[in-house]
Length: 381
Image 1 (cartoon, rainbow, N blue to C red):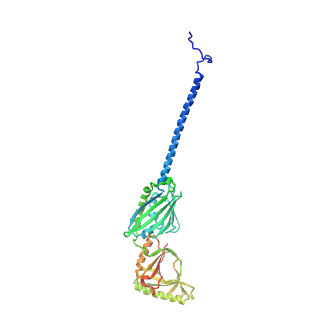
Image 2: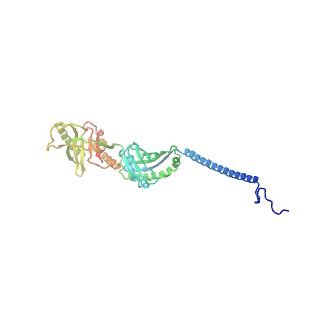
Image 3: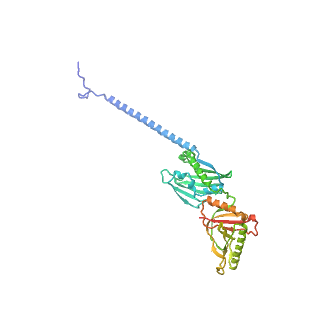
């Protein structure tokens, strides 16, 4: 009996090897395991991709179902007439005095374009701080003393409508400050809009509190019943005489009548023509009484020089920026109009720039007293 293992044919004395068919089966079996593992990985990857696509679709569809526009507004009651509140909003001269954005963008710089007040007034801000939005805001429409419409434009192209709505309320004003933007198809913007009221609303509330405090310190005078505004007038050649009187209306009437008579005679004798209504320029109104230059705009050339003995002089009236107001009614009631002019100048933060004057548009000899028209001009810087 053999005790030594017989070699496998072809082994040349080495240890027996597995039959070829076993090795082939083993290779086939290994390839099958690899293929199955790869298939599982592909299925998993497909599921992940499909899941991501579903999530993206849900986000997009959800965004499109969100409101396209967002509106934020806050209101405050201010113990001051609408015209006074309007004056502080009609431009950007004092915007940063009450703006809530100054505190959160302390390094922003501002520049201005267009007119100082009204349609076309524009403020541009630049802030280099990280995540800050640069842009501009411009007044595009006004309805004194009810409404101001503005457009805010950001550097990224986004825009928003801003509105100040003023409503009379118990002798004061209810002011509503609103912001409205259209996100269009901007899905991210629509999601951001969910938080807009929560983020912008408190800032608007603080701004309105600041504005209320400032406006309520101004004179509570309503000038909305008179014609008043800021304009520019040309300089004119005038013949005038310097005079004075007490503050008594009767004394003033006598002094002015005498002065106008002398000026009219001077114009006639010197070949000049009257070129506008008579006027008086205020030199002083104080404890001394009323000091004035009374004159008339003229055209033409003097036929002879003005002698030193003549009380009438030739000169040029003020030309430039003014506050112009129209008083309708008796001269004795003009003090009320002057009070309204003073309040207008204070609310618009204007700085006086010379002597005021009155231009008597109506002839008191042929016009009922309650229909007399007088233009009042205050030079301002």
